[in-house]
Image (tube, rainbow, N blue to C red):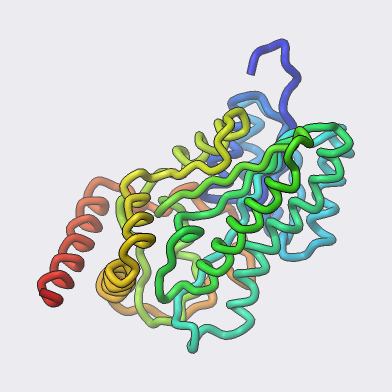
Length: 315
């Protein structure tokens, strides 16, 4: 952004950790005027202080995106403070592990309400201001799981599949309006979402490698507003599973099940509802610690071992 341009006004949901926190920093370095939203005010204040130290202005608006009235209030607060909204980054998300039969209905619903309906509420809140301005960019953080499924995480997959369909349809409706819709589809990302997921399996959860840094996803988010491409994948290697899923569904299903059973869920852990229903009391780290050199090697070796054992067994 050149000095001749006015600072962008950017609303970011899910801003207190992970991808949202990294995105807030990325926009802060550009001198943006930020509106930071998540369920916890204390967590948001920590991120806002980081952004102000980078030279940005930051407004904190505690928001539960599953509640439409709160999302409408978030948009109104942004416009009251800065006069407009240039970019809305819909990023808030929660995760849950467990078979369909063992996940409580309330947990399943809350994952969908947060990850999908929270994005719908965001679009409904931002669009009137975008239309009044004649422009604006809606950036929705989806997932590789918007294109492929996996057992054991059905609420998340359901929400992300629905989000991609919503984004495509909305893009078509907004043709010629000056309003852009962009979707980001990351694979596994090094955030605390795995540690804070609801987990009814009794096993520890870990992401499938290779694990992308949240800063890399944040760069893709910032770039997407100025690019013509509707959807941007982050994580080239994991994207290779998409053609396998599309062209050889039985092979994909077998591999996905084996990796979940033999790698992603391992060891023992207590049953927990994580932060699906209740927010954390303080800001989580931007990363989940999954990209340390030793851990990355161990994760890769374990995943390769699980896949090799599965293939040998099938053969």
